[in-house]
Amino acid sequence: MSYFLRDQGTLDQLREYAALRSLYHLKEADPHAWVIPRLHGRAKAGMVAVEFDEFGAGRPDEIHAELFADLMTDLKLETAYGHYVDAAPAEALAVVNMMSLFGLHRALRGALVGHFAAVEVTSSPGSRRLAEALRRVGAGPAAVRFYAEHVEADAVHEQVVRQDVVAGLLESEPELDADVVFGVRATTYLEDRLAARLLGAWRQGATALREP
Image (cartoon, rainbow, N blue to C red; front, side):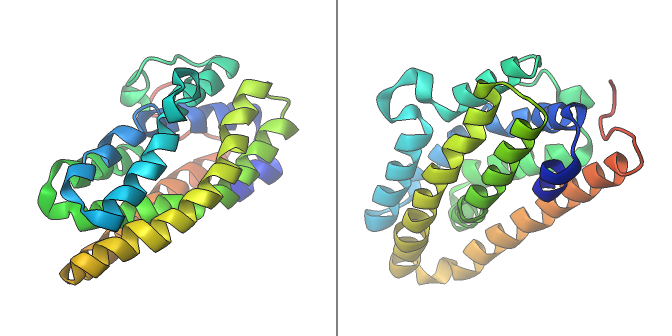
């Protein structure tokens, strides 16, 4: 998706993408934080370190969910959480529901860590492409900033997640290795379905939204 948007996406398609992603990004760090009490030692410390950045490192205007709201304002979209839920196709809702499902259940903590790893490992290069896409269509600085911020931040997060969160969890609870893999694969599968839905519509000059 990010390659398409970087190379040929229109402003309307980027606005559509942001509207659908708002269901994820406006609460992004919250379901991930549910796993913190269910981790121990190195895994817990690493998770808290990444979440500290996601929540703005103590600065409310730097909370990543707030930065995404600023992006939406720049693109003239509504910023209330859930505003676009009725317009979202099932593929977009599935990604968000998966994150909440994993976060809510202690038995799925390994899957949540796998999901979190999949997101952080792929975020930096994808964010770079999306920042380039927004610059190309003439979006404002607040829109560009959200993704530009994630290029550097998530490159650091990737290493912490790999070396501390995932490795720390499997060091203390090696029996969760299959759950971590499941979280990675479930995330990849659902993201691929969402990408297919959006790209299929856009390449036909249509919208993937269920309503305008």
